[in-house]
Image 1 (cartoon, each protein chain N blue to C red):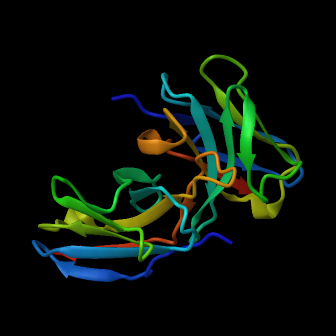
Image 2: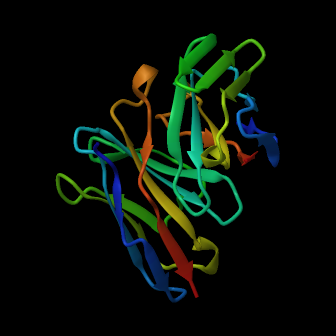
Image 3: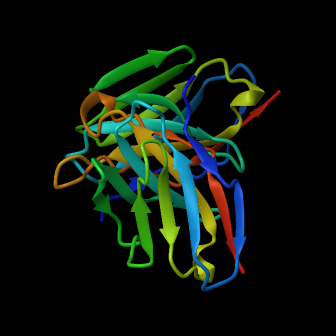
Length: 114
Length: 116
């Protein structure tokens, strides 16, 4: 059973701080990793994708991937109250017949306090 | 900016009735997906679709479910005989490619299905 694990939170940070969100996955052959943001009652919104070991930065967001440790993280710098949402880690377990379907974690709820 | 659209936003139905959920994927995308999210639970993959046929389906996608691309723009999910446990948010997603750097899937706003 391929699994994606996240701490459910809530993770509470003050405005302007760095929020750090973590995710581990079970399928060592996974190649594609994604972070989605989901506001309550809304659909997942793609924030970042990462495919290679190391860091990938996009504005205030940095995704980090360590395939040896099967670990993905998302850093949000200068957190804003509008960043308060549930952050979903998703993994595409390519290979073994997978056709691009994503396996999602349960999500980490982030609360940014003004 | 192109986006995935879904209709209706909310569907209420009686147990045993058939429902059809509709999606218009992003116009130049080739791969289409349905996911569902039961309230308070994780997003779960249902089915992927490419070149007018199912590429992969999950255990959830049993004989009660079917998908179709009836024309060049719409992508539908049919539930033949709804059960109470089918109540969930159903999301359509599309992507340009299924592997490599381009499997970024973009989600529609969802259809909330309530089965009474």
